[in-house]
Length: 112
Length: 427
Image 1 (tube, each protein chain N blue to C red):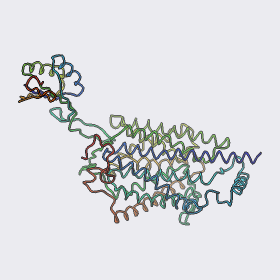
Image 2 (image 1 turned 180 degrees about the vertical axis):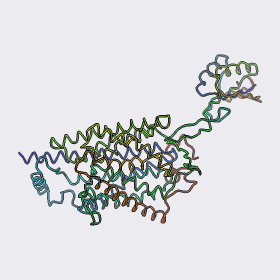
Image 3 (image 1 turned 90 degrees about the horizontal axis):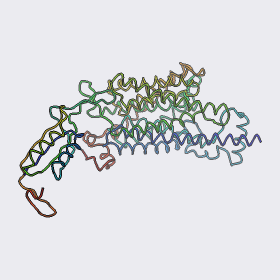
Image 4 (image 1 turned 45 degrees about the vertical axis):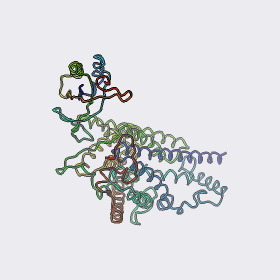
């Protein structure tokens, strides 16, 4: 089992969710996050003075999946979240030791 | 028949005063919304508390001694109900006598109680101006203590020299010198701004506003919809502020004057907003909403000193100049490191001075000598006495919250509650 954690542009969330559903992903977790990468921050203006916003708003999605879905998930997220411009985000992949469905007590891939 | 008409005129002029006063009272809501929109969420409860409390304190202090200092009569408005007469019949008789002397289209005759009600909301307006400028770092109770002195003494004194018609410490009379301030660009707005300026100088800037080399770090307001709502409320209340200051509605000439005042007040606000919007766009490359809001208010302050004599075009120009001045003034204040979160000192002070100077353009009864004498008299009096008052409060209890309290927000430090507890943490 793998956990795919992807940081994406907030306006791409719907596209990513749809393409993950299309390949059979059963559920995702979404968090609003802030941070910076190579895009750095940007400047805003208030009453004539500029100021730098260091941390930009992004969306983090987390998907726990069976190993055989991994390549498809990576492809789906990469395609759906891609704009070709700086700041599109990153995908991180972790091994998952165990998964348990709380309601039934099922564990392993059945719990996903 | 003539007596009935005089009674009716008395009734309509009194009623007009009361409705205008109610409109001006609503400006307290405008200030509260404008200020809570332009501060950070962690200072929202405190600034709302301050706005309600200062309105209430103004009403009490003006009742206790403010009106007495400004216009005479009795402390605590002891005999105001019967206009100083012995019984209700005597009131009617004296009203009819005064009306007959003044004539149908002469000076306004109205109830003293309605005059108090109309005047008291102006005091609250002057005090509201202070609250925005010292926001986000002043101790609540230090501010409220100052409000007592400002509304019970500082404002009524300068009011007595101007609208009250008294000599300045028996030395000279502003009215005789040709000073004219129709609804209070100077008496209310500049006075409030001067008290605020004295406070801000003693208080210092918010932590983090200015860098060591004079760079400005903006602290954006939390809720621009509220700031916009507040501006519209003020704009509406201003029709009572200026319109009511005609003092009379009950004859053709006065009714026309009221209509012109409404028209000009609105025109100046519109022109001020547009002028500030264009200037901000040209200077910054973006259309800064907060500057547009300040521009509308600047137009209103500018026309307040004389809304009845200018033509609509001239009124628009006076408002537009106000809108241009306010943008420059706000930037200039930041250069001086005078930290004013809502721009109150610029809107009401700098533009208030412009409003007074614009009076002789259209009003032959006013002179530049009188206007300048008025600016200095009101400005120096309010600034110096306010400065001393702030100093004394500072020595007794301090006027600024601790650095840690400022960081955590005045909501927790002063009020112990947050305005938006669901989605704001204490940090």
